[in-house]
Amino acid sequence: MEQIRYIWTDGSNKDFQRFYLSAEEYYSSLVDGVQNRLGFIPYNISDSIGTVLVAYIGDIAVGCAGLKAYSETDAEIKRVWVEPDQRRKHIAEDMMKMIEERARQSGFRRTVLQTREAMREAVLLYEKLGYLRIENYPPYDKLDGAVCFAKEL
Image (tube, rainbow, N blue to C red; front, side):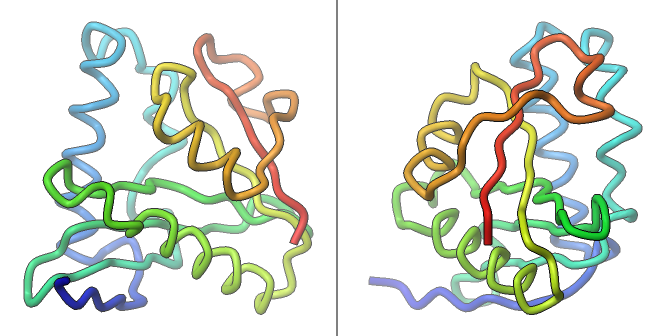
């Protein structure tokens, strides 16, 4: 099995920026075009994500996950992404656990995240990792199609 290494960085990382664009295209394809998700875009600006984890196989970036403060007690997990040809290798699961630990070490008591019901694999992963569905938190409480989860750390 290929050795996966993880690097901590921030939202300005070029590999993270590339994943951000790939994720944007994918999310837009889920809803028949970017015009149907314009309300989401301002809340997912990549440079606003201060803590980023990027997964590499060799020198190739294969996945990412971000973390940013949502409140004094909650950290929001953003942009969990693994390249389609690298999925089913537990990369997303490993990144989620590392992001949660980073949040815990930073003094947060809970992680929150937002996804869409159509992203069934993501929903199943979050549920497997102990996330519970919660009422949609702002700004997602006003956006059709959003589903939110939380996990006590």
